[in-house]
Amino acid sequence: MTLSTTPRKGRSLSWWLVVTWPVALYRLLRRRGWSRMLAFGASFGAVFVFLTVIISATSGGGDTGAVAKPATNGTPVAEPTTNGTPVAGTDIAVTKVVGAQMVTRNGYLSEWTVRRHNVRIVGTVTPKNAAVTIRSGHGDPPKHMGATATVPVQDGGFAVNVKPSGKVMQYELTTGTWTATVTLRRPGYNPAAPISAPTRAKVTHILAASVAHYANLLHRGETTLGNTQYASGMAGDAAFNDPNSAASRFSTYQTRFNPTRDLSFLKAFDKADSYYTADNEPNAISEWRDDMSLATSALSEWVNIAIDWQIRDRSTPDLQRAERKVTAALAKARGDIARVSAGR
Image 1 (cartoon, rainbow, N blue to C red):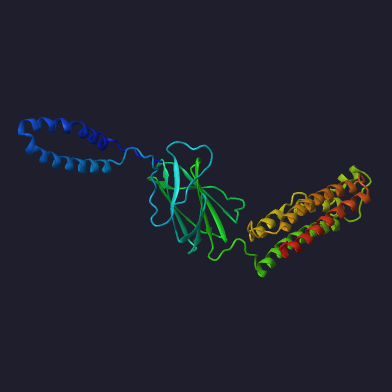
Image 2: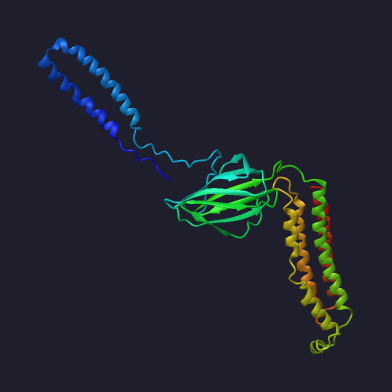
């Protein structure tokens, strides 16, 4: 930021005149006579007072400490927010957003309503060769800010084209010390409004499909495992040489479907959660994520117990209990879906 450092020349000149002009006038009056010069002196004094006022007004009053504001081009400037410790002489600001209309301002956050699909963010940076990066996130508040990309900077200015893909998009442009944040909203967006019935149906489908996926993993594993147990670990290892054996088939199931490391429910959660905001998101959707985490852990435990069961290191009741643990967690997740659909 630049501070005003105007010298105090006008003020010094004014005081010099105040001190010197009475002395000069006294000497002049003694030479020319008092009566003739009194009128001249009064006129001269009036002119002097007028000049003194003018000089003082134009001198600017010295260093005011006012912060220089960047040009806005008709669009309010997005105030930067600090990210770390400020470094002297560094700054970043968004001066305008082309293809969007500013609708509100909340603290350091500037929000625009998107008027066109393509949006151009324009700003300035100090020093002029400072590296600027951008990352984006969707949702309100934004979820999982995306990968960082470099923004070209030329002579202290930058401009980047973005394509908002959701109802709310947030962009962070940063120099590493200062961050300018821009939030873009679709026209008519109301963060507190409940989602529509068609959108609720989409959310329900996303979550239900994920539950069905894990239920299918368990069912496929049980079918592949069958009822075959081996007399010992050595016998089970020998069975791997036979591609038609239960041990070989169950190994192929693990390799192909990776049930112990399947975390696809997290992607389903992110996709479903993107339809909500912090104002209208139901608590049950977070409960669904937690219950699905328990279900995936239980499924991984079932697979490990099934391997031991094949070589008689675990009993059949152990295997059955592990299976019931998976189905119970999935049943609870289905109940969460019903509450999500009801907005609870």
